[in-house]
Amino acid sequence: MAQYYEGIGRRKESIARVRLMTGTGKFTVNEKEGLAFFTRMGDFEDILRPFSAVGEEATKYDVSVHVNGGGTTGQTESVRLGIARALQIINAEWTSALRKKGLLTRDARVKERKKPGLKKARKAPTYTKR
Picture 1 (cartoon, rainbow, N blue to C red):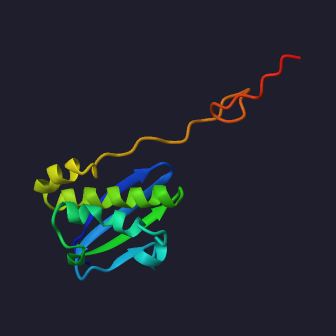
Picture 2 (spheres, helix red, strand yellow):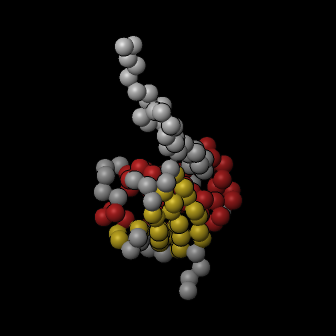
Picture 3 (cartoon, rainbow, N blue to C red):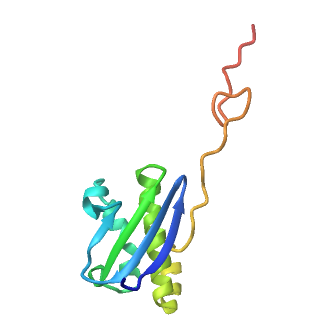
């Protein structure tokens, strides 16, 4: 078994477990090829931002991701955070470059719960005087 560096990323309801191994640049997400999993335009480029932030080639590492929960945006951002955290473990000197680009900050915004008497979290039923 090859040595790997693991980073866990979370966003909204999504959790991604990312493993980086030195290799040829193979990118798999849930046993699928990376571009086949993230089909929305710009998502895959967004995921690879941590590599460009530290000046590393994404082709130097094999990336294996297990992601579940949430939607497309949440999964994309959770994978990106996981990659950034794994790169931070590989070389601690990259931390400042990753932090400067905002790639190590966990976006804590989650869906607000629905309150009783309201239609959604904040939407109130229409007021009628009579």
